[in-house]
Image 1 (cartoon, rainbow over the protein chains, first blue to last red):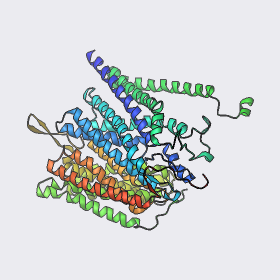
Image 2 (cartoon, each protein chain N blue to C red):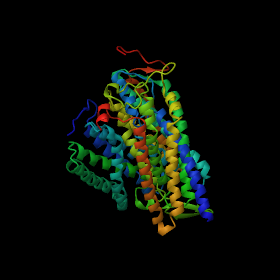
Image 3 (tube, rainbow over the protein chains, first blue to last red):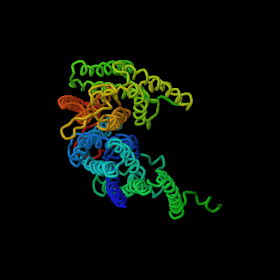
Image 4 (cartoon, rainbow over the protein chains, first blue to last red):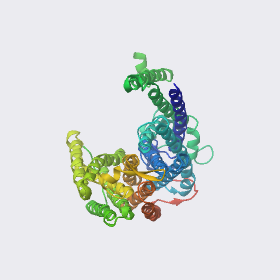
Length: 300
Length: 282
């Protein structure tokens, strides 16, 4: 009984860390215009819309975060193998991983922008100086919380995988959660505030992203401020739930039927979530208007 | 059917880069064998240099392959290279001194099979697909072997599976504390996978230039070598790890500074805290 209570406590702590990680990850990627919103930021100068938005395309978020977290975990593992205190080891590992992230961000911005010289998009050095450091700060929060969570899973829950491998797996999961949950909020709403809500992006509007703010010109910090309100926390809840439910079912049901109990509970959870998702989708379509023409609606 | 949308204009032809990358990479990985001959671990950093040569070659192979309109496939090409190269590299480490050569041959076979499947069974019909996937698998295997040799001091399986654990001042061999047992290879996999795709992914566009992309590839290689050198502190002797760290820091600073100079050369304008320029018609 005591071990189960301990396990649930660790599970809750890991879920809380994952929630912070998800929120920081989404805000970081939105400030850097990483993931799918990147294509519009990249396209805008080609359509004649020169902008002052940070364009950091390192890779998709899942592989990029797979690297940052695996790197933080790998260096932390190496320092722990050298008998350094785990907390110090994790902080040092995450610090070095954040440095790598920052360097990749600057080279991605310089490379993409220099390759768009034909369309007159200038390189803004002040963007590099002011925005890279903000993404690095958010990345540090995301990397530190996720590596700490992996260390808890490994050291407290006794997961058989070594820390770097757990870091790789949960890093990819973190990037995927932030990419799937948070990006639409930035890419479809924030970049296209001038379009009608829910209208999608017609070809004529491609690249016509919002470039001017209430006062002056919009920059990526404005985008981070905006998405930190809803998109970030939504990503955090998504990743937190993934981690919490995954560990919860393992801690509680692994002793049942030699491990098969956890697998069966996992399948049941997937089915329950599929039903919930379908319900929300149908409800949203009914409430916020069908995407069909009025004539079709009348005939059906 | 795919249409080739970008042409490599000017610069070095791909064949030269391929031969140069292959030769330098193999020679550098073999230079780590000096560790065995001299009984030290001080020559481990050559493994990292071999990996960097492979990464530079790999970035150009991705450019070569992705010029057939596979724009969104750039990051996945890096993962593909390392996924196929990993099998060849791990298998080859059993063959002692012949390991790098065995890795190249085996990776080429795996790459050829994958290329055949992609082109003929999945019907992609991209002219350079088979050649590129063969190259990518070899590059993946050489990069992993280079970094593994740098972090353990040798490219043999025994050194990658046995680490040292110190308990109460007593040093004991342990699988858990080794490159494979600690899964540090997973970190190396991602380090190489991102480093190999980043140069072309970052530099693609109408004003792509070869020298800028290759400089970025070298920068990514040295940047990946820095954390690899830090992680190697747990596996090789401290002087050997420090030599790797110094070599990587110096190389990274040199390539990063040069990359910024090249970006400044190619950029439309280099502005500091200036507004959006007014263009005609907008």
